Structures are given as C-alpha cells and as structure tokens.
Length: 103
Image (tube, rainbow, N blue to C red; front, side, top):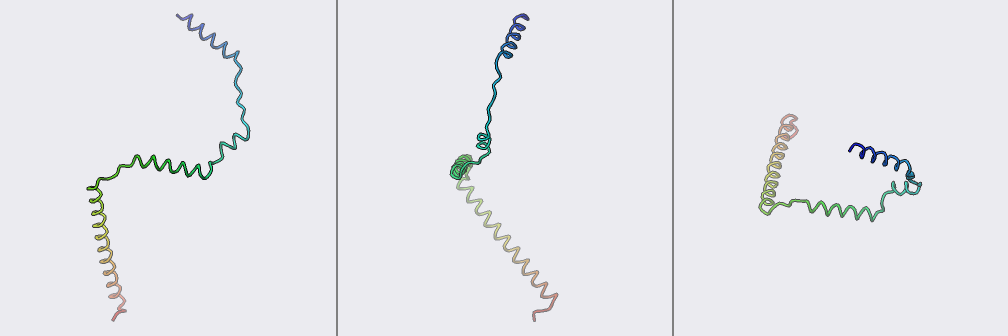
C-alpha cells in the first residue's frame, strides 16, 4: 500500500517537472479595460436591475397595518405640533414679560 502511494507521488512530481509552466500574457490594453468603468447605459441598466431585485425582497404591509401606521403618524404630528405651539407661546410670553416691550 505504501509503495503505491509513493509511486503515485513520484510520478506526479515527474509529470509536473516535465510540463511547461503556463505563461500568462498581460497587455496594457487588458489592464486598462479592467479598470475602465462601464458606460452610462450599462450603469443605468445595472441600477434598475438591482432595484428590481431589491423590490422582490420587500415585505409590504397589509392594509390593516398600513392604516395603523398612518394613524400613528398623524397622531404624532398633532402631538408634536401642539407641543411646539405651546413652547412658542410660552417663550413669547416670557420674552414680553422680561423686556416689557408690549404695552
């Protein structure tokens, strides 16, 4: 068994030594082509294809969830608006009282 393994290794080693190593020819043109960015239409096409693939992954809310989210946003806007109006009125009254300009 050990003889077969060593025989195979020695044959593989001799085959590798006998084979000519492949020389890759690289030219300046190929290097420039690699670093060159794609044209405008190719980039637009790639953009829309990536948008399409992302839209397939989107989990859209149900109608009930959408209504709940909409109501939550509207209530939040009203609350924040009232708080800002109260702060504005309070700061305005404080400035009038402090400076005494109205009268």
